[in-house]
Length: 348
Ligand code: NAP
Ligand code: ZN
Image 1: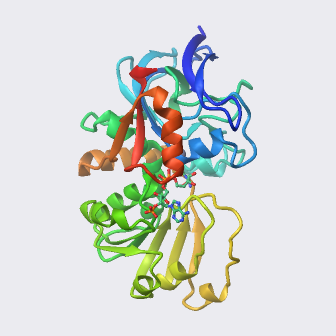
Image 2 (image 1 turned 45 degrees about the horizontal axis):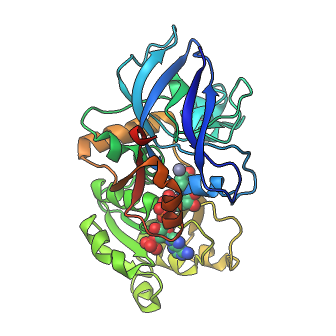
Image 3 (image 1 turned 30 degrees about the vertical axis):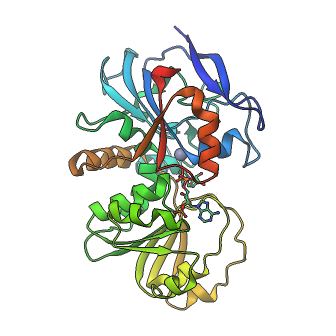
């Protein structure tokens, strides 16, 4: 049976998020119904709620860093049982037949994957995210939460975690590799922790002088204040891979100069047109490349959760109550979070 759930939703780009009730779909044979216990607050939630990308349909319930407990399963579900701790990230469905889905990279589904919020599900209903009391998700897209991980600290792994893990994993980061991370926020602090746990030598770039000691505490071998050109110049020609997590347009030139021959700069923030424009001479000299990366597939996300359990990696979180969300968005926009807000959904 369908269920009416409580949530916090955005009703327009300028109004604060507010309490709202809506119906989740009926439990289908392959569906898992989850009682949501924790939900992380991603910068993408803010971009979407405030319509920064110009395509938000309201009302919209954000939230794609979901951890909870299974409360019901459809008759064909075999992977999960009632009472299990599980997780849901940014994806809730995909075609399951194209080459990308076949390769376990559902985030690059050739038919377009279904986002946890802001998409239409296969029944034509708008998907709504994790700032809600419960969610219904087809079982393939439900992850198993390792028992040893603190569920609140693990919630941001479902987006910030996998988005930073995937490019490091793809580029085979390990001992002997020199990695740079730009921005010490939700994604950035996880990229730093993962690269350190993988054995790399890590340089953290930050615009915030006051985050230097924090970056060192989190394991950075070098910390560079990116607004200081002298500090930047000292790192030119040093790095194999840089993961850029900055959410706004910014100049890439000095970061490309920090790469070694064959180095790669991976953009994870959807910053759109380069401003100022990128001079391709910076790429030619040293056969460098700029690439992008979006979250990760379901198999890789499970691998990342298991990596975290094995290596004791979780996110540094600030727990908040649901009614603090609008203040949390303002603080996120002002770069004032260390390093992820997580909503205790018992407060909804
Ligand atoms: P966040 O927590 O706000 O962190 C962003 C960090 O970037 C800040 O902590 C800050 O670090 C730095 N920064 C902020 N404003 C800046 C500016 N004007 N100039 C230079 N640096 C600035 O955001 P997040 O949740 O990590 O998300 C980062 C971006 O990734 C967002 O745009 C989000 O939508 C996107 N995202 C993409 C994917 C994907 O699949 N590719 C997934 C999730 C999120 P310092 O203070 O250290 O400079
Ligand atoms: Zn996200």
